[in-house]
Each structure stands twice: as structure tokens, then as C-alpha cells.
Image 1 (spheres, helix red, strand yellow):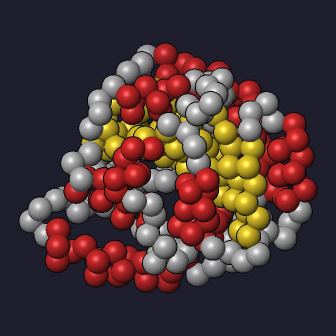
Image 2: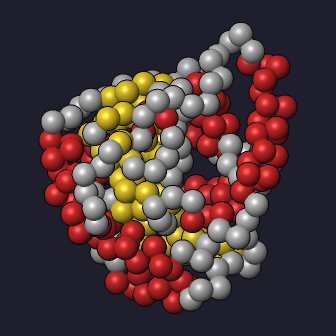
Image 3: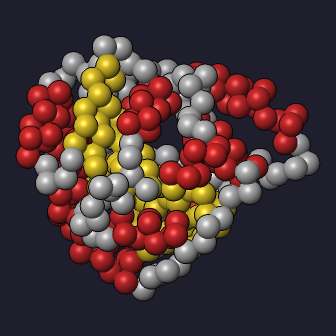
Length: 261
């Protein structure tokens, strides 16, 4: 039976955060789904946890264990190729999901066939997805706060030029048309902007589900890396690839204001 969603979680020395992420998935994900973990050569013992999760998790779990770090695009693409779900979610290990999160993302994707990518609101990202200030102080307070946040926003959407891929949902049919992540981007980002642009060029809408909130610790994938240098390199690659082709066709601004809580 085809699951409603495949959730791809990329790991690289994320043991500290993965436990909380999986606990929140167990607690708040009722939609039939499969988990696909892609471990990028972690050395923090997380693989022991992944094997335990595969044994105990209430829905199917697949493990991909890499001998080397294939970074964001390469690792997630491995998960995408193994995914069977009608919808596919890329979810960072340093996140905490909240009640109704997956139902909300799927609802936003299915209300219009031209929706290509859906993202949630969060505390740590950029642009229209950021909520400030947040009123919860600890992870324990998060679920009840998120219920109040979503209660008054049911069905609200915000059209977005870009989404940040700490969490993003795409219908399988959309990825089949536009392709997976560009593996030419090394660590440092912009592979998410690249896929967003390809979705827009194919005529799809990008939306923020204002009734879905996910906590994001943020920046865990770049510990001990020269982040600004890496990001500058990927920014150059992005503009080299797209600027001339897209100039005067699409708005290529990469940032937008956040939203108030």
C-alpha cells in the first residue's frame, strides 16, 4: 500500500537533536507514512539510535547509511529515490513537529493542483516563514502553543517566492516533473532556492501553510564549517546558473519579511 507521505530525514552527527525529532513525530504524526533516514557518515553513535528506531517505530522505516558525507543535496536525493509516498517531505533532524503538522501540509498541497511546494511557519528560517516573537520558552510548552497558533489560522496560506528546506513538502508528481535537488551545490545552501525556482518556472505555486508550525533549532549542519565562505560559493553558482536566463522573467529576490506571532 502506498503511504500518504514519505518523510526523509538527513543526519550528520545529529544524535542530540534526532531523539527529540523522532519523539515529536511519534506523538504528532497520525497520517500513514514511512520514514527514510539518510545518515551522512556520522560518528556520534546516531546509527545505533537509527537501528532502534527502525525496530520500534509504528510505521515503516528505511535506513541509508553512507560511508562519506554526501551533503544536503546528495543525501536527500538518495532518500527521494527510495520514497514511495504520494507526498514527500524533507525534514531536518534538528526540528520538532507539532500537532496536525503533516495533515496541514498535505491539505495545503491538495487544495490546488498548481501548488508545487509547501512549507510551515517556524522560529528559525527566513522570509515569510518566520514567526516572531514566539511565546513558548521550552520544547515542553511547544505543542500547546502550536495548537493555539494554528487554531485561528486554519486554511490560511501565504504565497511565497522561496521556501527554506528545513521542512518542505512536495507532491511526488511535482518532483517527477521538475527533478530532485541539484547536487552541484556543496554545503552552504541555495539548493533549496534552486528547486524553488524550478518549481516556479514550471508554473507551480509555493505556499506557506500559516496553520502549521515546526520548531527549528537551526544551523546545526554547519558546525565547524566556514559557513559564510561556503554560502558565498553556492550563491555564485546559483547566479551563474540562473541570473542571465531568468532576468526579466521572475522576481529573484531571496528574502522577504517575517510574520508576527
